[in-house]
Length: 414
Image 1: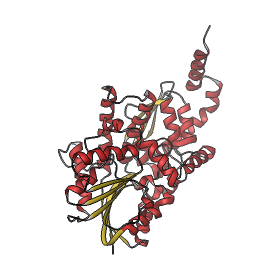
Image 2 (image 1 turned 90 degrees about the vertical axis):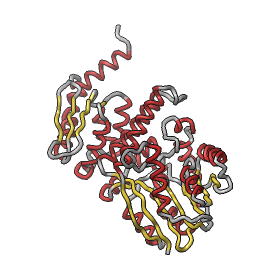
Image 3 (image 1 turned 120 degrees about the horizontal axis):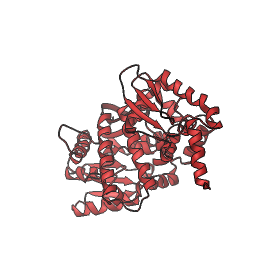
Image 4 (image 1 turned 135 degrees about the horizontal axis):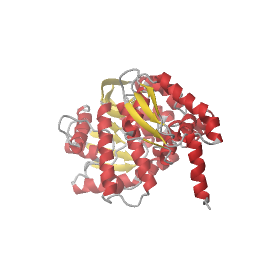
């Protein structure tokens, strides 16, 4: 006699192959969604291997990313059609879809995000549910600490197992022949070079991570105040700073950026603004304007989404917001620049390097896999590791598809 589990497997197989009633009734929807993708994909294409083993070519009208997607169950398309990238992750986790190179699939959809429109975004009730859940994690003073702890307080040992020795969790800036550590230090010094720091200057770092930028600034003679909401990060940074005998030059505070009101000669912030949320962008710019001396400079590194995609992006909640960075939001750069201008902060010398972030993410994923395989990451489930691999691939694909970018910019206060 077949077990209940075997019956479920058999039922799913009938559904997936279209042999069952559900499969036959839903087949027009599946075909229609693939037809929509086929019409709207203008750059690159994908070979879709259907649950019955047949192959469907989608797109291929012009150069661009090429992906191979295996649909092990049509349920994957249902999830994608109803819940966008949140649904696609659920399908991936459930084994309903796979790919020999998931990054290419994400790059393909990002490269065609404008022409695809809402075809691969959450719709109807699922869109409202995802958006409502995201809104509940808005970064008020209390919730912001919880949101940061949910990601960064996974433990210093977790991050140390796969980040480079600088413990930099942001895009590196590569030159020919750089390893990851050298490229991360190149990024840090490129940002510090924008500030024209002199010995004795006071520097505020909004979102100091594990302390690398503060340490490099102190080596240049600056006095640094670093802000973080992660107790794990503060503990790590304090120990490293003490070991380098720089405690007299660096103070790491467990403090929200909205609660500081002092005067600094310069301000630095690396990929922190994505965590504040759209509602708090004005408060973030207020903090820079309030704490920066006249004539001072701020240097930011931030992740932005293409302006034409922002309104559709902000209307829901994607995989990153749902599973990785609660309360987060990528920057709409024109709006962000306008907020700076309203506060008397000039916007100059923008340098974008999105493909460097793609390379950073690729190397992180290699290091992550090696750390897991060698047992250096302990205490986490296989499901957690699949989630993080998906996250790293998802982000890499976004940068390779050019719909998102990372950039450094200098703000000057008159």
